[in-house]
Image (cartoon, rainbow, N blue to C red; front, side, top):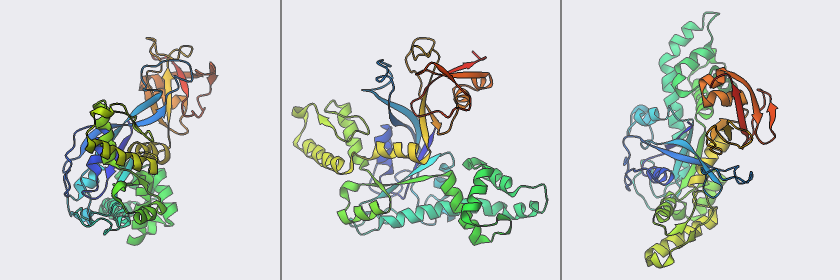
Length: 389
């Protein structure tokens, strides 16, 4: 399953975002290092379920919305010089190893300094946080490489030794392949064999960009001055109110409103059950949602999956005529796959034995065979024919 990590300095709203996205318990407080040990939960990628277009009811979606699970990690806050051990140091950085992509939560209100201490709203520049988090991750990667660099240089004297594979081997836990190393070397504009320290740091910056793609999200946008919001928007940040999303999900659980995560608006269904304070709070959230197209929490998760990791959703079935499995369950499974994935890739995703026994695939919408080199599209419904049961 795809794993996203929530990164950022202390007291920027990561744990609130985590709770809003997963409804899993996580301590929330307005001081640094509320999170010491990483929190693990399940969030969801939102997509349109194909069942309605097929005139079917699958039983696995809500009002035609399909939520595909992804792992979400809320890690401890990062402070400047964490790679040297400051704050919780490498404990934070090491938790990022298992992440496929990172959602960097930034305090868009500018009401906390670089170490997460409360300050007057707008007095801290959130763009400084964007820069230092990237720098810390780069220097963390460089520290790993630097420990092995002399050995790599010695081995590079052998004509049979591949520097790219050697570096990929020490970055195995980061999901770095030799091809990634070559791409990072090329984009950094360096020659690894003759690289000095400055060149290696540039190289590690590219490794981070390739292996841990990052989305910057300006949280607490409801508290941010308009001028600051425009600066952050120009810098490419998305925006969110994690506290607003959490309030909406709690209101849904209480039966007070109608809302699906990712909706641009909500509707009140029990106005008489709301206190004046609750009504005022919901009005404020509604104003933020109207301005930004939603609370931003589900939008950020979707952006990370779709635009950072370039994933699509594919539905494997066993009966292409009924769009079901062998038990008659309609569209029982939804898999996140990389763009460019083939039916053979899907077969391995379902089960290794099915992949090994792959014979051919059928496009359930057309009832036609497709080649094993066919690049699947978002929303495809595919029957895999395999020698494996």
